[in-house]
Image 1 (tube, one colour):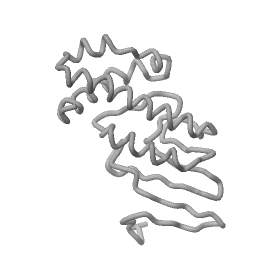
Image 2 (cartoon, one colour; image 1 turned 180 degrees about the horizontal axis):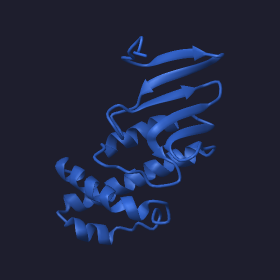
Image 3 (cartoon, one colour; image 1 turned 90 degrees about the vertical axis):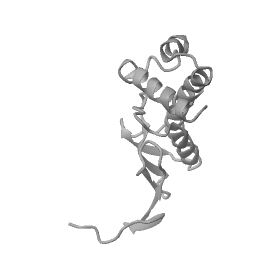
Image 4 (cartoon, one colour; image 1 turned 45 degrees about the vertical axis):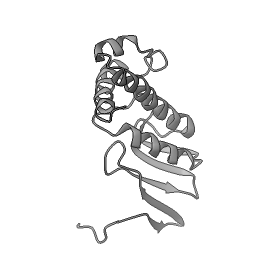
Length: 158
């Protein structure tokens, strides 16, 4: 069925006595990131902005804008979040904060290395990953996340 309306800004839909407040959160993980807030239940649908219980796959995302989006989401005081990856979370603040802290760690460590003209291999080897290395998918995703962040920070001149 084709859509009967296009959202061009924030919108609220009412259904079954609940309000679904839809807003654009990106560009962050992707340019199209949206979130849905259900205030009556304090539920926040966050999609791929949060990868619950594991590190995210950053890819070519704008991690700076992603951090800003997470800052806005932390203001919702959600009781539950529905992430794009992982189970529904009753530790909404903790899961939002973990993703935010990981992204900031990438930006700070790789940004400093890029600013100092330190080769990526050296920067990666010297970075303290201990806070995150126990998380699922760390071994599979962290190196590529760090490399892409290093390149992003290098391009941004940071």
